[in-house]
Image 1: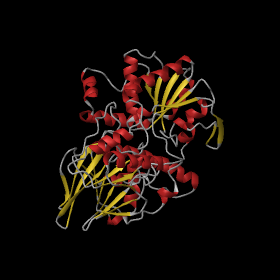
Image 2: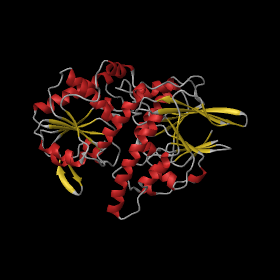
Image 3: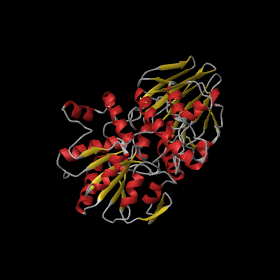
Image 4: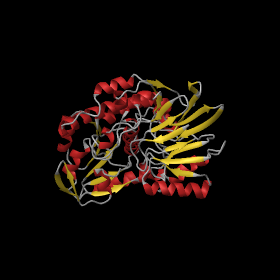
Length: 454
């Protein structure tokens, strides 16, 4: 048996892992490489394997960097089943349809063929096969899986994969993206009993977030400062999880009167659509969220909140006097409505730009977070006078201490080896050092396209 990595090797995007056994070839995830645009060379390039030879795929969750190339995979010949939770299936569909629309616009602008089209999304969605958490699910006589709640976004999973070859069974665990507890709405990551080999993400493998319990008050402080200065607070959000978490916590701050009544706009049709899917799966919410719903609280609504679906409604935000809070799509500001709000707000020192999510290298969000004094948006230069800050505790990724804790729970058996992916160099090296020092387990940082024997 061998494993190779076709994305997220020395970087955080493009997750795609190929596992080859004597009798099957399958993938774990098939994500988009994310940067300044969808039409990047990495996304347009042919797969380094033959999609038609892939028997099945297991999808850990619905973020684009894990599911974004599924329609291309289908377009290029894949016809196997895609196993995931039902929530992941529903969320992946709206993410991929939205991606197809953006890709079509980019393809037209650059005069190239689109990476995939909406019809390819509809086609690949027919391949999905739902699997429940904690269910022993046999895919072939030699391969069975169990999905564990990863606590990252709704429906996210770590994968326990048992593979039998030559009469011997090996258990491989794929972490997917591990969540950052305690987090609103989603449950804490489940622990894994044991494994022979673990593939673990390392997005924040070299960092320690602020305590999760502090993030609501940090958010409140930023809001109060922004309101007090008469400015606008801009928060770029991903459609999945960060949008829902922020609405949940703004609901709490508003209804407990910890912030004054101020206009709040959720300016992202995709995030709004995702909220409707969240409402279908309240059984997957954590206990606190379920109790609040049971008490009659509409956790996704409060006085002053406006959902803006259409472009016309989005433009009307400009006419609302300051101060106001704007949550808009484009978590890394590589697309979405946040770009238009930045054009109007970046140059005013009264305004505040707050990052709550990971900003990949090469994105406008990363440049702003690192202190750029001027940026180009749609080939137009803008001076950056707005205040820029970040709250790390809102990350949906575990930091190093939480990754180490998750790994330390894998004991029966203790892994013989750990492979590190989905991280930038400094985080990969820091997590590897932590594993060596604390767990004393052999670990290796994966390389793109390299084969690892199991």
